[in-house]
Picture 1 (tube, rainbow, N blue to C red):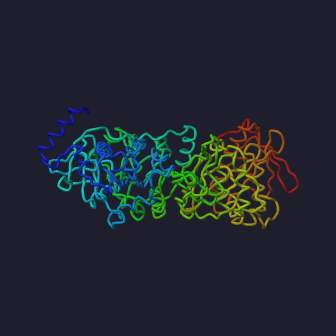
Picture 2: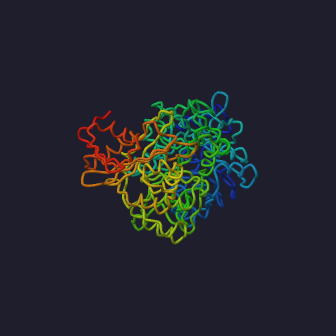
Picture 3: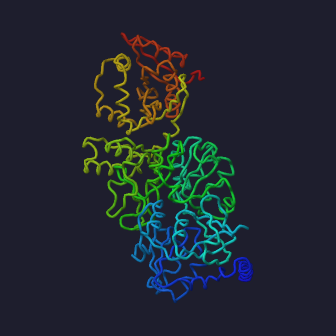
Amino acid sequence: MTSLYNDVLYESYIISYGNKVVTASEAASKISNGSRIFIGSGCGEPQQLIHAMVRDENLQDIMIYQMLSYTLAKYFPEPHFFKRFSIKLFFVTIPMQQAALEGKIDYIPTYLSQIPNFFRNNLITIDTALIQISPPDRFGVASLGVSVDVTLEAIKHAKTIIAQVNPRMPRTHGDGFIHVNDIDYLVPFEEELLINSPDSIDETISSRIAQYVKELVDDGSTLQVGYGYLPYTLLRYFDDKNDLGIHTHMISDEFISLFEKGVINNKKKNFMTGRAVATFCMGSRIAYDYIDNNIQFYFGTADFVNTPAIIGRNDNFVSIISGLEVDLTGQVCSDSVGRQFFSGTGDQVNFIRGANLSKGGISIIAIPSTAVNDKNEMISRIVPTLRNGAGVGTLRSDVNFVVTEYGIAQLKGKSIYQRVIELTQIAHPDFREELIDAAKKNRYIFKDQMPLPAEDLIFLEAYKSRIKLGSGKIMSVRPLLPSDEIAYRNFFYSLKQETVFLRFFHSITIFSRKMAQEHWANMDYRNFISLVGRVRNKANNEIMAIGTYAEFEPQWAEVAFVVREDFQGQGIAGYLLKELEKIAIKNGYKGFYAMVLSENESMIHVFKKHYPEIKISMAGEEIELRMPFERTIRS
């Protein structure tokens, strides 16, 4: 905006509000030396007030508290800045990272939802609050716009409130209203709000992570998307979801297209139905214009929106957040790399615990499997132990799912041994062997643990499928993985001995760790592969069927199935047979071979039904079957 325009704006406010109206420099002169200043957060920063405060060389020994800080970083190179100002941040933004590393600013680790209590209880005393508001309405009520979060409580307890009135600040609905009578000084000044453009992430990696995350998000879920470039990037891949709701801490541009397409409509929310709930907004004019006076949005305080008991009132709540690294026991570091602070504690744990309180709720830690260090070397984000000095942002007991571009690790309810396998399985293939070796040294796993496949198994995604069974239950099918060891053994012990005998031709009463490991360790998913059928039983997916083929002779593979007794007679073996055939054809096989006991009439019937050209011969009490693919009649 031109200086002339702002002069006219200034004069118009004097007519309405008289002596409350001052220039930015006049407002800065109202601040006393030694003052404790709160500055509005993120894209709600009152930039003009910040500039005027710093430029007023009479101001000395000023202590500044801020949640998300950007504008101040422009002044860090000035020689006397840190002699005049002491910066205390609740979150270390990217422009602040170098100063934090150099020890020039102070970081206060805390949950954002606790900050309002610091002001209420005088743990932090505020002399002056510098905020930015929308133009007051005809009743004198203005809005905090994009920054309600902790700002509302700060101004309630500040001795002096100075507000930049910016016509470009959207007027948002919710808790963030303030009357001009409660403001000491008004500074009319129009300028564009700060723009938040998250760093991009490799599209291949983000699309693969999104593919796995979407598997865990059902239509009708209510989402929280954590602060950071990756979680918001994932939203770009959610176009095929339906009836999503929002209860989150931050609205960004990535949400807006989903609102416009009707993907997000908040209709299925059981708590605050029809409203997208958040505490602040950081984006561009795309988001600012969309939320302006939009009743679909409710901007509340951090101590309301980010409280687990409130979050948990949303059924089917899904928290999608990120981190810097995860250790093999499930501890997540989110605010530092070693001793170097990179962000903040935020309310990651609150949303995870809120998801745990939610009926049908889950939480997801989504991270790329690798990063590049300051030596330009690729390093693993899944590590044996967190680095020295790293803060534990999320406890191992709170973590549910961890997702990388290599798959999904489910940690909730799992032992340390199981967590090691789950997390190593989704680590970058180049680091899996050393992670297993480190886990053995740390005594997290058994010394005889076999190495996991050091291969990118993304091609296995094509082998996944789902089918609705005659019982109405949904069976998901995917290849057997090392992390299935416990579930696989539980499946075996759930079978009757008669079923085991029909599959293996002799009685087996023990299915040891070694046997289970040898099964998956020998699989290459091309010449030897097992598909498992899983059905959800409350929060657990139980294996209730397994189908396997293994190369028998060139271009022929031996096939076998086991279906748990309570799921037999629902076409499961036939379905697995067709899925295995697709994989076998892709890998160059021309037919299946099977040996079946003559009394296993149901299995013989399945083979005859699907392979009319079947060739049958007797071998004692066993029946030998050859089933060519070429002329198979497919349904």
